[in-house]
Figure 1 (cartoon, rainbow, N blue to C red):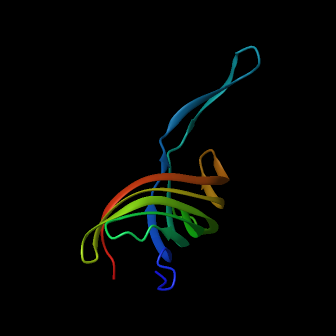
Figure 2: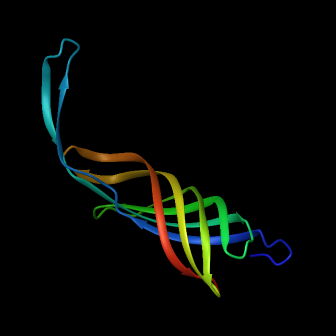
Amino acid sequence: WLTPAPFLGLEVDYLHATPGDKQQDYWITNHVRHTIRGATEPEITLRFDTIALQPTIRYPGDTWQPYVAAGPMLAWGQYGSNPTNTSLGLNVETGVRIVVWKGLFLSASYRYQQAHFTFREAKREHVNGFTTFYESQFALAGIGWNF
């Protein structure tokens, strides 16, 4: 936090997520509702690691410190054993910190992240490369130490 402007700071965040899509059957039908063909979509598991650098504005209160932050995010996505894909994205967060004792605080926040990925190397049954829009929303709670 900046001394001349105690309401303004810079935060660095790291987050790991493993979203997935369960295996499911689907059918393709024509305009008169006749089934043309059916198939099974395989299970897809992705891994995402993100690091965000974000300017933060917070109320510099002694106990309650609501805040809002937004900034760029560097994201690494991986699909199975395929090469890792890197993308620049967006990270937005809002929440409140409650100072409990000399630097010890509780926090509750909402975070939104988004990034685009293209997995050209993805080769599995029914999958021959794909592009995905990673979009996540998190409700976070924690205990922290301000140093």
